[in-house]
Amino acid sequence: MGRVIAPDYRVSQAGVDDCAEVAAFLWAAWSAVDHDAEAFKSFTDEWVHHIASVEHLEERLCGEATPVLVVRAAGAIVGVAALESRPNATIEVAEILVHPLAAHTGVGSLLLKASLQHARRINAKRIVARAEDDDGRDFFRHRGFRSVDGRMLERRP
Image (cartoon, rainbow, N blue to C red; front, side, top):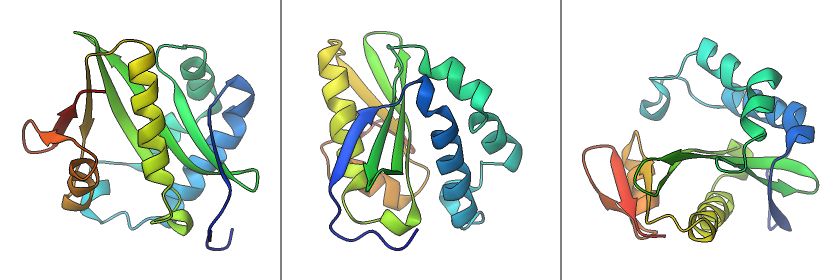
């Protein structure tokens, strides 16, 4: 995939039929990042292998309450957001992953916007996100989140 420039993005909720494509995206994105970067130090190949397995994705994508959102450009997935239901009417943005070739083109913002829309649709009272590095914390802060502790941020949907 070449660098994405001014694409026509489409955001949708992934379904079971998308498992192989989401798994391939996760592996491609994981392969393209600097594994020594602060944001990825807690990740391991084994963990990525687990979350990128078709079996895990099929299990995950069967639940409407915890969707996986995808952004496509020219039919290819360029970003994924995984949401988790938490107690007390809370939704967690468990992951937002953008392919490095689509970085800084608005994919992460689209995924977060769709996450907030989902939270409002299910009447969540709070949305939280964990950011492992300063860039991640800045991303969420610039979109209305406030720090709860060192890595956790929150806002109302």
